[in-house]
Image (cartoon, rainbow, N blue to C red; front, side, top):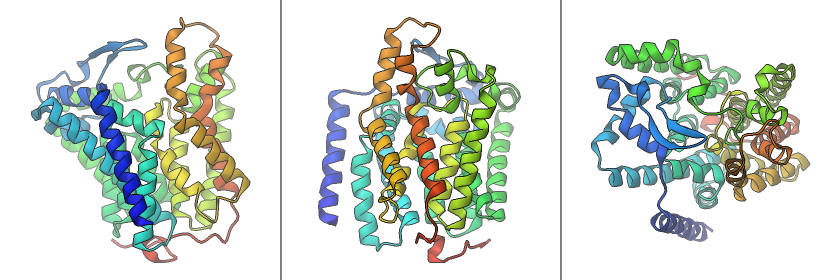
Length: 399
């Protein structure tokens, strides 16, 4: 089985290399990382703009200043070298995500774990959030591999917490992984995560005080710099409701009840996963809730679809009706590249109000998939075997 899995992965990677060779991507996000990062040292990091096309004609650097420090080495590489290095690192990160997810969800032998990880990586390369991440040169795969690697492999609270904290210092969204530490009552890991994030932020502040003050006092809450909330590119709860309502959902009385409902559903899923000692279920719940509650969750942020699909296909879950429905929904939404199709449709239309219903309803795809997955986690029966961290039935509190 391992041999067949290896061949599947080899063929999938070869097709990926062929695809980007014949149809070279235009990794705009990687271009922003590379070109904007030196401005941290000279000033003007947040004045940088990359000219693109509507509906986001200008791309700005939207991450914390510490991210610019991390991306700074890219500025010293030729563009072609940076592009291929980033592609290679992202594919390796996808494999790491698959391996770490398999370790969290099952106590299989190393050989079976690697075999399953190779198969999931081969398939995952063609899921829309992953392809979008690769095409845009996004950092998502690298950060999520760091988070999952820390939780699945690292044994100490300091190592796990520091990894999550550093990932959150680069891009705020991985910070929701801190809910994992709180849910599993790993207080020292949570403290280390906070300390690492603060230390990284303080380092960037020391190097670039003006840019740091500007970001943390003003820009961090300005969602207009990121892009249009109403666009189908935004697959968060706010984005989905904004398209259905025809205006920003936060201006509607329906917003807070909808957010409260999703929060209650996530809380129920979290409680059920904690009760069953389902470590992957806890992490998926935290990440999916973060994507739903975040004001803007571009489709490439949803690479957590892959760990979710691995969770849903585990032998003890795949016969459950909700698990099957959720898996089918994820496959339909991600394998068919539904969101890019809707984006092209949206871009061909003049901005109208109300938003076209025929576009708005399928535009809820990832939101609906996340809600279905949270329902599956919250209703999954107890007494389900699951891999425990460090092969134990308790959560180690090692320092």
